[in-house]
Image 1 (cartoon, rainbow, N blue to C red):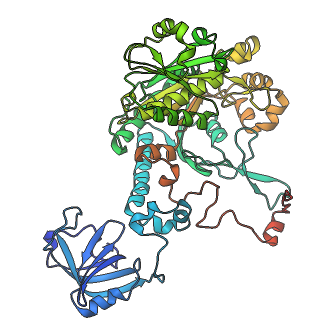
Image 2 (image 1 turned 90 degrees about the vertical axis):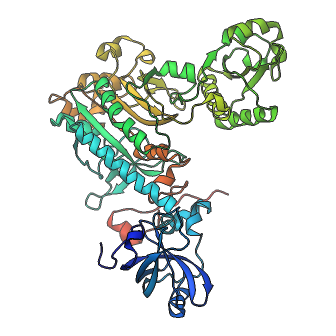
Length: 588
């Protein structure tokens, strides 16, 4: 115990009755009974203890304080007459003999009630995060995060991985999201960058002869926030294995993650090895997403050939997808609300019809299907009570809209989803290349350092858009936890891969000098992955936003309201690093 206390506020039991003790903590509240009797709740990191002042002097000492002041209480433990079975210390109370103020709260009113801080506006919570974290419900998620990280670290070490930290100040990367740049004082006009991931360093470790590497790695990306992504900074369980294949990576992850999810999760059921494997193309066809929630039992079906010429204009000349739901009892109002959600998520409409008790196709777009109703019922194996939602558009748009239908309807119709579990899957065989939506040019689909399936021969002889990569994503309950890959460790194959996106050998050497050079000295085949720690904890706690599981998160606008970041700096600081601020012109 620390010098200022003999016990913590979650420690005393009936067996301690009669002991003289010293407790410290936050003065949470007081319920006054009379001028010389009251009931005080004292709270510390561990729990709460009831303090019962029974003299006017002791009552005055507490009443003189604002709540959330920190105090030291010396007194005698006794058995409570009105026991509280809901808390571990509910059998006892402490009669105080002395109260010492350790840290005074000078404010009569708090920004929010501590135990109800989650009801407050999020920006207020983040501005006063030190108060928000006093809420036991908020605090326990940060404690849980610590325990999860400790178990992950232990499991990785048991699999013979060596924890190695990689640099935070590094070179800017030409690929991926926007970098956070750090100006150099000693080298005017030059910049460091905070790493988007330890990608190149961990591959260099493999070429250095380290066999198995991991770290709980901080990563920095200048990108917008969303529910499952924190702006600015996030952490991942980064790992890499030398002389390893895709199967080796899968085996480690399938052994490490399920026990952690079963132990700490809101649900105690998690997929066992081997996880379901789905090719990227099959995922888009069957689930309308490359991160499908396999708890949802619905499957996307292609009905283009059947319905493209039914006379319904949005289907004409387009790909048409269908999602069937049996025993559908939702109201028209609920259907419209779910279709509206699909539109908000995709900017594309969802269409529908259902089969009534007489076997007739009714509702929605039913009038366009009457001439084909028997064919439609046969193709989709429809029976009375079934409901069908449809999407239409170019292939990718139709797929993604169907995926949104599957997710939104599947979550709203209870018998379509088994919520009480963690369902993992691997999405494999990603395309190596794609046509960029903005550029219209051929680009890498995922990680440019992935090994193409078929190696150099495929790069030289096949249509780039048909080449698959040894690239894989780990998905759990519709959340992408990580991307990983077998790495392209051969400089000749690397040069050919980058040629396809318009970068010649000299450009590759210039942009990736360390990796290219290292690979020329005998690099081992290697593979890795990096599951996101923040997303894992969010899944385990069941929270809707990742900010709930980060000790000091930024808000949606990438602002740290507690520290006032980002902030202006003075002219001397700018001068030291040779920077001049040019503000954007204000638009009329």
